[in-house]
Length: 178
Image (tube, rainbow, N blue to C red; front, side):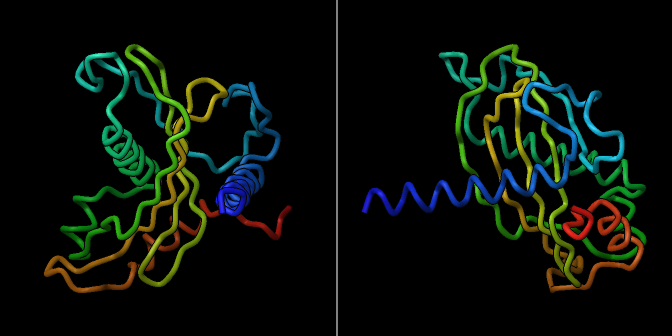
C-alpha cells in the first residue's frame, strides 16, 4: 500500500505544479518574481520569520503557516480593491475558510525571508478555491489548497457579491490561454 500512497502524492504534487506553471508563465525555478512574466496573476506576500514564530529549536511552528496564509489572502484582497471589513459593512458577508489541505515539505527557520504566493484556481457562486505556496527563495516549503466560503454575518451561506466575484475571476488561472 505504500506505493499507492506515493503515487497519489506524486499525482497531487504534479497537479499543483501544473497549476503553478500555468499561472506563472515564464517563471522558472530559481528565477526571482521580478524576472517572471509581467502579466502573471500571482499575489506575493513577503515576510520574515521572527523569534515569536519559532519553537526552541528555531523552527517555525506548523500552525504559523496558516497565519501567514491568512495575512497573504487579506493583502491579496486589498490589492484587488476590497477589504474584509468593507465587504462585511457594505455587503453583510464574510469569507471564511471552509477547507484547508496543507502539505508541509520543508521547515522554515528563524530569520528566513519567505514569501506566500497565492493563486486563485476557481471561483464559484459562493466559494473561491486558492492554492497558496510558502517559499524560501526557489525552495517550496508548504503547499496549501484553500476553499473560502461566502457566508452572511448571521452564519448562513451567501452568494459572492458581483464585484467581489469579478475581482477574483480576473485573477483566476485561465487554462484556455495555455
